[in-house]
Length: 230
Image 1 (spheres, rainbow, N blue to C red):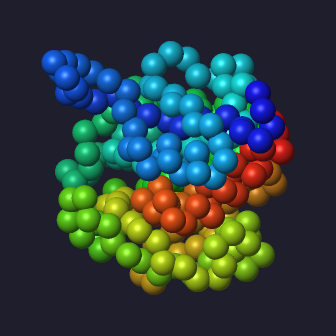
Image 2 (image 1 turned 135 degrees about the vertical axis):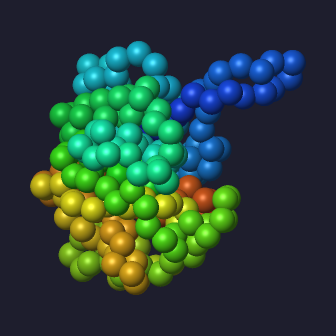
């Protein structure tokens, strides 16, 4: 592999998909993730929720993105399902928990996006609020939220002390897992970012940086650390 083009794995999901004459189940991913990784200087690798991902099978990667998506099964953090929580997707939950575990074992640079940050938190023993208001104004409409970022954090070095992000979620972190530090909050106190203490680069954001191809700062930071691994 080329050191200038690190391999960045991105989790995907299985959905019924139509293309050409076909209407079949397919591994899908919003293109913005691919474009952001490419424009930041990496080679994206789509990781479907099939097979057994572990430290051995992802050792070829230089970095990892856990993408946004549907709600995590509340059973994963010991809670009863709220009526407003979406239908569980066990295959995706199992896959992404395994990917996070493997990435942490390998000290692989990791970026968790929206659901991805929640997966990181739950994987490490944290819990979620199953419903919050004000961060999901309408289907496919992003809420522009100004967040405050703590000084002395990796995220502060990447984005500065204050920035506006695009959010589309109705769940958020409740009890933050041991080892994760909260690095940013929304005006209503919602946790907007976390970092894993002692890791080279393990950052979770509640927002959707893949929605803005003009602002590659987060993906560029991930790719930069991944390049040093490669």
